[in-house]
Length: 356
Image 1 (tube, rainbow, N blue to C red):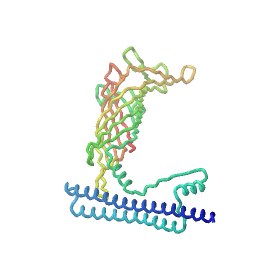
Image 2 (cartoon, rainbow, N blue to C red):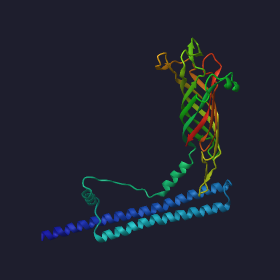
Image 3 (spheres, rainbow, N blue to C red):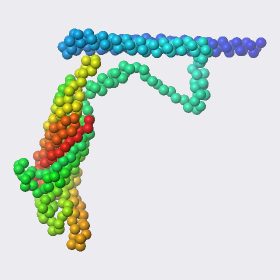
Image 4 (cartoon, rainbow, N blue to C red):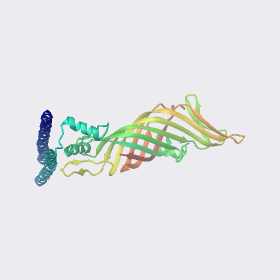
């Protein structure tokens, strides 16, 4: 008799526990349905408000505003139907589980799950809220600042007395004197609204090489650096100076704007022509001269001479580029002399790649 009473008490306790769990789950589903409905209606109100604001500013016509409102209402109605339907399916499954006696209390369910996956317990949270993704997408496409990786290369040489014609009498080989630039830039739209005007800024590392003509090399004579003829026949005579610069450009990007289905217009970059006008400032990190020749015994000699060669420590100048989809022509000109006590200035022409 006692065993029967205990069994009845045990079954009654289990039934009450299951009933509490069932009621708790039903309440959670009900709250979820109310939350979904409220959230979708609030989102619809925000969209309608934005559409009305554009209509008042004459950015869209009355017919366009009406169409956008209908589209937004249909979208959120579909979202409510979809998400509430999912909750209703959960409720139906919950009722079926109760009928089948599959509802456990939290403690029993935890023990069951622990048994099924041995010693490991995992908790995964999945968000079914598509509105969060929509808002993230809107914030992303409204960003005013983008970033680019910059790579440039080309020919390097010098001008004397700021005369372009002096290139014809340059002491350096034009096509064999190369420059390389590697950097990172930020591109910020000047206005809050979509426009074609940007401020582009960043930092770069430059490797400038000057290869001397006529078997000459650089010789330091006190406060001056001169080109002199080497006693041996040089197969290599290259002066390399490395510098860090901070470029700044006013850029005009003529890429076509993009219009989204909700009527919002945003700008796109690097889809058409870009023109950049500006300059740079920086400082030199090091200078070396590389010489290579064969001595009287026929032995190849390689020399690396490390010196500042009376070069100006700081440099600044003008730069410009014309590009299409981030690939274009690039020009730089140093306003300060390359060497102290001279009127020789560095000039660079080449290709530039802005990888957005």
